[in-house]
Image (cartoon, rainbow, N blue to C red):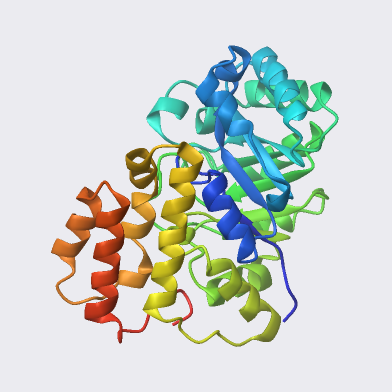
Length: 329
């Protein structure tokens, strides 16, 4: 098997520089920022401007923006361009109420003319390549992605990432890759198509490349507490064999490193720990451990490094001979 590109999906409160750099170290071929509010960029909101900070070590990196107004999206794209990313990505897929419910993100699947107007405005406003990420459609009765992909391509986007769910599904049910494959195999499409949704194992990643012909696979929730998933998948795609399971001690040290990086990035111990909780408390490393519920609750309540790391060390002492459950076993 040959190596195929693996991308870290843009995720709010997840893909900050601390996590992006870890994923890059383990083989992510491209990383994306958290999604950035275009209106807040135009208003120069400090917390939003901070999301534009990128490091040369994480390149190629895309900054993703969202909004529902062509003018403000174009203005935001110009601001983003000055930050020096490799791509500007348009968020047409976020399903959460505070975004889609206000007509942005996946909400634009209900107003395709506006989505296309935004796309044209951003493409015309910047010199950087513009990409987009969206879903299959608004709901099961409105799966418009095959036609929509052609329209977005005609507006000038350079790549299209597709999450194999509708907005109505949110993150429930299974991702439908058949329509992603239909877009890729449409003879009118000539831009790269990136598939996204439910890729959590090396075998599934290989299947998505082989069965659906996508140009890259994007991984989102499968990275939580497991930034080394890129190395696992990359090895399998290159060799056809799985890496042996890693020791729990090794995995825990990576989780500790992530906590330290989050604290350094945010500049506050408690906030950094809260920001990284979804990773260390839900890591597949701890999956299947006997009577782990109370320890997990303690991890979620701990708000100092001393507490978090002591709990992690206790886990290693108590269950250290338990194979670390990564996507490779």
